Length: 241
Image (cartoon, rainbow, N blue to C red; front, side, top):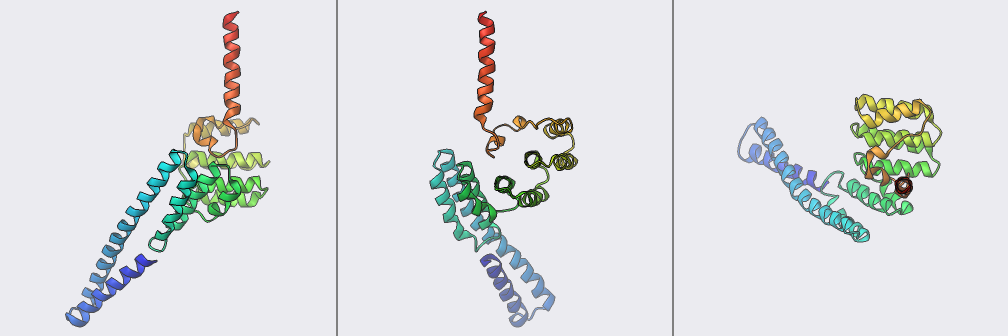
């Protein structure tokens, strides 16, 4: 990484200069080099991340304006920062993969999601769901395990893991995952409710997670709207009578 290399070179030059040319003790040179390394690293990191964040904000505005293709291109232009900072490339891959997944371009999203950042839990969940749909339960579980190990406090992530296990016929494992999630998030109502439902042999209910749930394309919001409309129509007919 350029950031590390430049910081190391600057700290080395300072250390050599102090010891060899300024006649300072070795320990003084070592301490000075560590201070210089930290300062240069932080300075470069802030400069790079400022530019990187600005591009990501531009891409986010494009997404909000329904210009997904343009957002992807903006994000790809940010690859130039990857040699300067750790995990930048992985974060970009996660963002691109997420956008393509939301567009239902699952084939296009897969290679980006596979090269994504493990702490981007939404991208990791989308990758795991893609593996489930491709009938790769081992890869699905492995991906969910990595995601929940990195991000322990996201209830929807635990619920998605359990939902996919249940959908794959792993009822007992789904219960175990919800129990594990509740240990990390004691008292979470959505996880607790779904654990109760599975223990009773019923289907999980994910509507408590709101719109975020529908972003994973495991259930169509149209079906819920249709049910609600039918129920409201029925009530109106009863009132007319």
